[in-house]
Image (cartoon, rainbow, N blue to C red; front, top):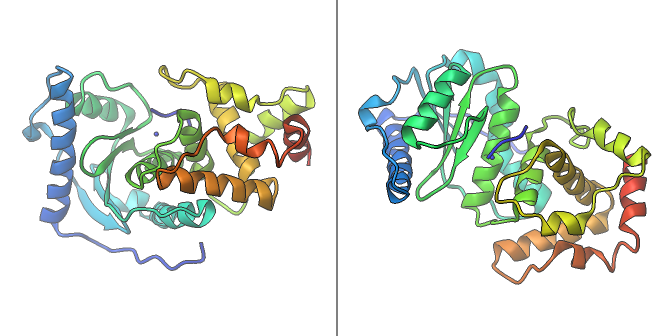
Length: 282
């Protein structure tokens, strides 16, 4: 998914949350967003223009406001609730317990309209994470790929509230990685085969080029795929690449000098091209 946004541990699903608690949390987040929009000189709608929520529901650390009946997406919630634990176990970082707001609207048009109301100039995306002061706000609409979209954007939110401010290509690569559900995170349906095809033709992602990339305008489709392929390689190529990347993330989180990832990997991977190619030829 191209957006501007893994267990064995028992997670308790709370059937409902007090309306005042959820509403107050969402109001805080919207007020923070409105404050940000005001700073940049944009006008915003008033709280009275918010949709009528059919659902106000807490699941793990996600507070969900939806215009779609809970029955339509309830079966996906365990896969959303598991996400903080997946990040913590896979990346070996501390994931903050801060509540993340998730809005579920009935269609793409409603999502675009709502996003523009609370933050004029917001991009038209299938899902969106709005970061600023207060709880993270994830905007989605319900469709067949909803769980991948919401996991992607909630990965952005969880990394953000946990103090992991990473280069955009890594932030997106991790979100692409964790949007996948199942036993085989390497097998991302839209990236894995394309990456293997690139490797067969001698096209290997240039890690140093990714690190130098000007990401002010976001990533294109190939850059999303490249970012995913590097993250997946690091987490699954060997114990050494995984532990090196985990240590790099820990240094970022603890505000230690993380430096360039490529510099850390160079002593451990004599030939990036050979190692990357061998991994995707398996």
